Length: 186
Image (cartoon, rainbow, N blue to C red; front, side, top):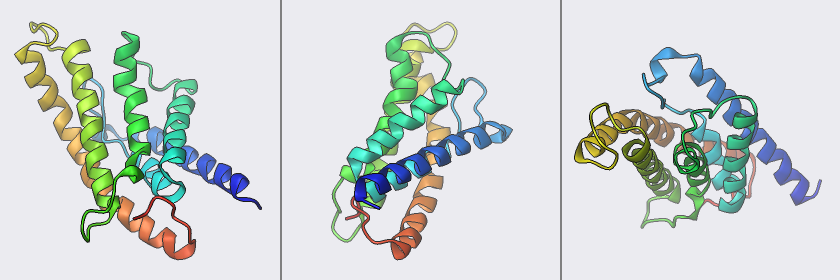
């Protein structure tokens, strides 16, 4: 089997895993926030894809995860194209970019990539909250909207970061022992 075919199979596998984890996560009430957002287990296969196949194919994996989710009826809170991008499209792409970060001293880029990309994902959700989902009685872009959005998005993104930082390195370590050629691993 040539490399292109193998990579397409892996991308399909990672996208399928992300979609399944999205569906399973939606069925677990304590993972859901009351007004949207959740502890997102689906980022795990996208992060692993980024380290396994490289950041470019990681981005493709993130985009396909978003597209399949959209086609299956998920990702459906739409107010404005920019809001939609900030809530769904940009976070999916950001997770696929994880392998782009370098190793920091003796710290693997797995840790730096997951942490930095989760911070960027959090920032995308905060911006959406500030400009498209301000709390009742607060104007878009106001201090009240910033305070509310930072607080609301912090907890579920922090929980997602904790899960990802615990699970992704273990998966990568185990998978890299089985198969050589983790392109994004530094």
